[in-house]
Amino acid sequence: MSDFVVIDVETTGGKPGASRITDIALVFIRHDIIIGSYSTLINPKRNIDRYVQKITGITNDMVKDAPKFHQLADKIVDLTFNKTIVGHNVKFDYSMLKSEFNRLGINYERDTIDTINMARKALPELSLYNLDAITEYLDIEIRNRHRALGDAEATAKLFLKLKFMLNYKINNTMFISF
Image (cartoon, rainbow, N blue to C red; front, side):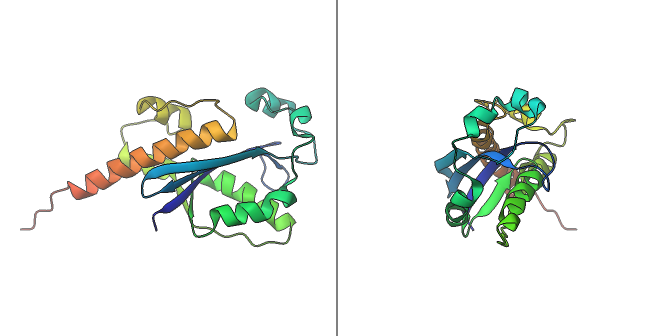
C-alpha cells in the first residue's frame, strides 16, 4: 500500500478513555509525496485542562463553536479509508480516535506505523526519540508546535525521510554468504 495518512490530535487531557479530541490534522501521502491535508478544531463538549491550554494554545473559547466529533466522523472514516495511519507515538493518537468512534458505536480499525519505531531503527545513535529531538537532528522544521496540523506536517516529513533512510539501509546492505 502506498497511501498513508499522518494523523495528529490534541486533546482535553492525556487519557484516551476520559479525554476528548480538540484539534485533529490529517496529512495525506501518496507515492512518497505529500498531496494535501485536512485539519479542524473540534468541540470536545467539556473543558480543556489549563495545562493543556498552555501547551497547545487551544482554549475553551476557540472550540465552543467548532464541530463536534460526531459531525466529522463520516468524513474522517472516508479520508482514512484504505490508508495506513502514521503518527509519532501513534498509539496515543489512534487510541484517541478509536475512543471517539467507540462513543458513537463505530468500530474504527486501521493499520498503523509509528515513526518512533522507524527512528529507533534508522537512528540508533539517538538517546531521545521525541518529535522535537528527532526533527531537530534531521533538520525538519516544526511550525506551530503542539497544534495538530504543525505536528502532523512535521511527522509527515519525518516519515518520508525515515522511510528513505530505512530503504537505503536495506537496499545497500551487503549480504555475504560463506
